[in-house]
Image (cartoon, rainbow, N blue to C red):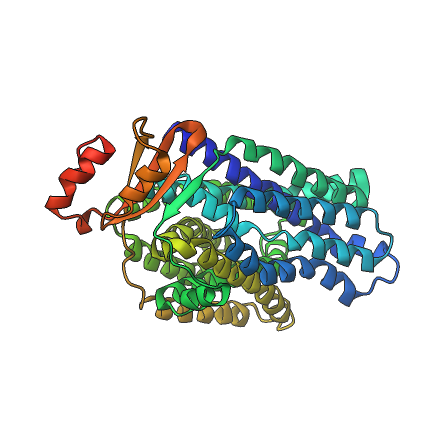
Length: 453
């Protein structure tokens, strides 16, 4: 990765991490602390926790449709402001209804897909899986840190103080956008209405398989973390306050397997094979966990399989999605994917709660394993994604940028030109296999560099 990509990846990953840190810190404490609010009932406490995800699922698609037409950084700022305002509303509330409203407002800043789309703009195709891996790692680390930090912070500042912390984290995330260069995207313009654009994305079968994948992954993740803590306490003898110390080493260790897998998938164009193998690892991990009552080491091995697969999938899914989605509808496809992710988390939480009521650990893990097997079977229909190449070019001095990009897009195989005027560079994303020899020389002259096919 070049310096620009590293800086942008750090900034956009920080936005994800800061938002998720604020979100996750609430989860392990609110079922208890929420009882102190006026009019609180178990159902309303559950709604206060879940309404954030519901708002996210509903508004991801509208935000992503706008992101394919308007400046993505502007939409991210709006989303982060909503996140901060929602935190402030919840912090100032004495009633559970005020907390519900605040959480709904915070969730209305549904810009996860917009952040990922912007990351795909400022990274080359060959480096995207690495960037997505870093973003996935930031999410995993924020999850682990939040579950460890939330109870401690609540003991210091109370639940209202914790909501103020989420507000501050949202504001801090806005400032990290200053590290991301201003981008102007140029591609072949296909005029579509919002509904037509959404229909186009929903008709693509491979994209639908990827949406089902993110839905299944987060369903299983959420259900597992509802279902697993009681087993760590009962069978492994690990108190709740120490669970973060279990997750963090396993998460870090899994990266030593996940990163080479991601590099293999991208460099040797084995994305489909690695993807299928990761789902198989989820199946194996869940199957091992079904025997966790016999040994804490079995629990840890099952968790290790799951964490490895989770990190691989978190990196490959957005990268694959950006390769398969139509250029002009990239953010829209990511918005549908993000909605599927939050719906998966919502369903996973519900399923996990029902599994707890079974009082049969082997049956519970067996049900989750069956879900993973269905996911694996559906994913066999995926085709290898299209691989584009990227070139980093200095903007020309002898011709206007608009005229230069317009000429570039007349060549078959040139899919998109992302201009970062403040850096005086542009990324050209192209499929070299579609460029014929007669056009190669003309394109070489236009970009001022030899283009090898």
